Length: 133
Image 1 (cartoon, rainbow, N blue to C red):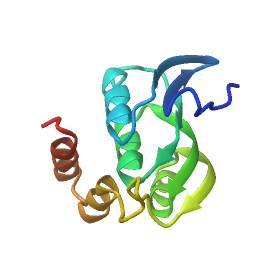
Image 2: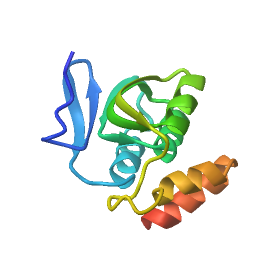
Image 3: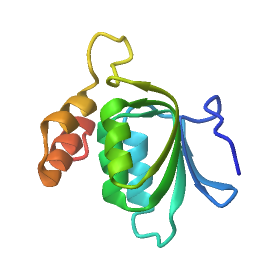
Image 4: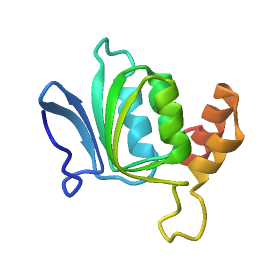
């Protein structure tokens, strides 16, 4: 089993003992791109992602391709959502919410995920936020 190395990437998708996708990007965009690229895969993957907020958790559950997650930081809402949807989560730290980089406020993706129950509306708002609409 590989161990996450967040000095080399912020996100890595693992099949068996092999990293098949990685990114050093920030925010939700690298996860969106990764899940989009592998959405038709029949495999279940392990995801290493430095930070998991509720928006990321919802994308992961919606994708249906992630069996387990290893992360440095997860928000309480994301942790609860993943557990409710039977996705194994191993986090170094659980926090109330994911904050912006400057710690001035809750990150926009977390706000969208907390305030948008409908999956279609959530995806549309997230796509608009990331420039994917």
